Length: 368
Image (tube, rainbow, N blue to C red; front, side, top):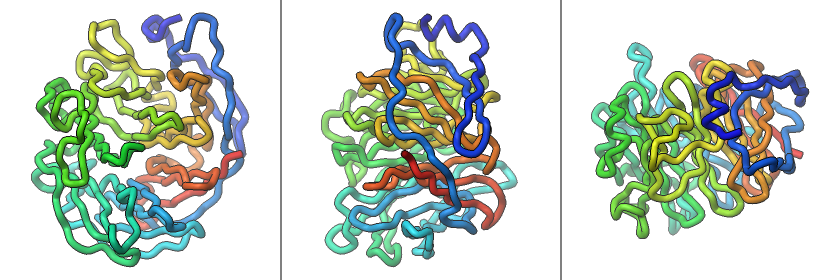
């Protein structure tokens, strides 16, 4: 059955047991081929525990090359923490100009973080952030010597901002270029404009220029996105992305250069010519509203906000489709957002969100 056809029916529900509680799997899967089954291989969560606490909306996690620590951003405060593998944390500074407002339910503030792939704290101190300022969304570079942040250099400005749909994740790809997820800023037409920075996955150099080989000769890598949230690469170097939809379907997309992912013409799968359909969709009120993703052992993990659970979606042998989804920790920790694979370890870090000032957690999820 095609994904288009399956959209006409309510996603099936299957009860499964995982880790500490019964969980429920929802979703619609695009079949990898007629009669083909996706083997459920790869690690799965074997537990969960508190790693670090007293955080306020941890939004992004970026591990420092060669160090047993990560930088963690706080959306509401603009503060950046260095968190060790043992959970100890130290405030290393803040990013200027980030704006967040509870009064307007502004979803801006300090968002993603990405350390330079060659960061060493001496000859390369560059770390990058995406923030919502009073006038725009922007990517900025700061210096980090392992102890404190300094300097402030905008490298890409003028991304339209709004109280919603700011995107925000940034990550260096296997090609060592910086990928930037931008939302449509509630101006859906921007997602289809190839000369707009909004509603896109951008691919840029460390100076903010268009990366060589981009499909349209500018910074745009893919377009037709509504509010992209998570970026991660599988072991074959394929880019996967999670995206928050309007009211019917949230998406997991396999992102390829120059492709159009449909918004605003399509939400979820559609038959409109030239559009690239998602590999998986969630119903927003049935475990959906995905935030970030991480890939470990050829399995995609996705955190969810309204869904309040962690999803596990195994890739098939070709890496072009996903298998049966399984949900973990349903409702146990509230809204879940920040998510990262710990380098060199079969473990995830998972952040709670919106529990109140200094009440959020970083959770450790071992995989086996």
